[in-house]
Image 1: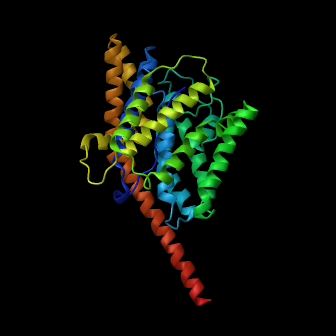
Image 2: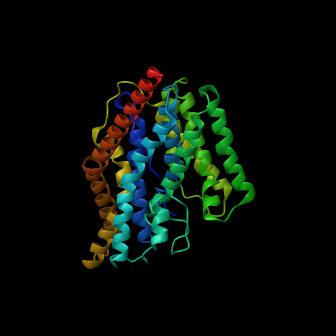
Image 3: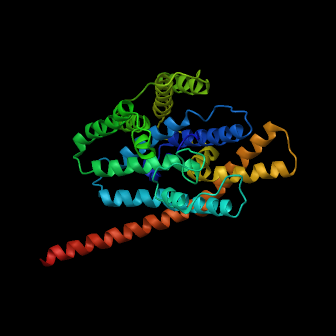
Length: 354
């Protein structure tokens, strides 16, 4: 199973939390390295727990940007769609074209599977797994589901919204544990990942009110990070997921506890964090090209292949971010803002006339 989604949210510079960028950077590289190692049957396991980390961060950031700011639920959802979907569609269509042209080792997806992938509906692929055409897109399926639920929750008054969210997301997780659904849609939407997202909401609700001492924050981060590198024994089931979730909460909470205004910024690490979404979406296609090249030139050193695949995916993602992702997102956000401002002005003029 491929691991780790993107945090998927860009804060304004005034709200920027640099520790989140650092976690995004480390986690993105870990995911890329993990998938490269799995391809060569040498799993290094550094990327396996990052799925919980990213969903926790996603819940954290989305909660921050929706509280006390008079959000229009429709505009919030439109901006999330503009942020997530265009780049995902682009990479998915390129990968589908590669498959139907026979330039891939995988069997080409059907048009039906492509359509379900593009609209983020969980379905079974040719390998019998619940994955879209672009396999990392499984995390976007959940992310967009969370965005839809959070959009609905924006209609709830601020002081009751967190408890309403707790009821919704924990209820879905409990429902999944109780019913154990096997269908792709029900199994996806009632997964325990709901609790990771909920943990992020709760962290966001308390972190500015509770100042954690630096030693405590550093201890949490260290224990969470070291613990996440340990391969848990098979057969733990829910116990293993609970341990992974707890370690991931410690990582995020510890990093946030170290956040201090005016702290020096590590520029190159911040840039990797900025590019994390592009790295995440592009890394499988890029690594496929690298693996093909390694086979063509008969490179058999596995460590070199893993390192080159990780480096190539990271570099391509860092190039794609300023060249594709950032300008595309800024253009769509500006268009949406103009459109909503015009609508608001028209409504105000109509109300004035009436």
